[in-house]
Length: 100
Image (cartoon, rainbow, N blue to C red; front, side, top):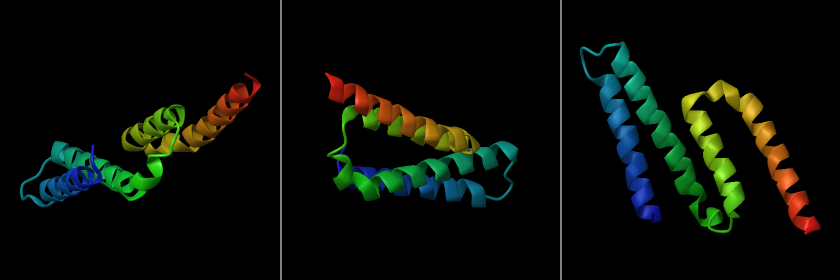
């Protein structure tokens, strides 16, 4: 995906989420949907900002980062456990690679 397309999708998600949250007569489900759209858009906007640096990331670290991004969207409180666990996993993978 190109950086321009990623930025457009991020802005679209944030705009749709704000639109759902500001629409009159919303219900509890609308609040969840709007919050999810805004949160997903913010994560994609952060990826858009880091896109030039992400082209140099090793694939295994990209998978771990993607899992953390999904965790941030679904359960933000679990990041308190997820980030240290991801750092330990990346360190173990780096040490395993050097031995070979």
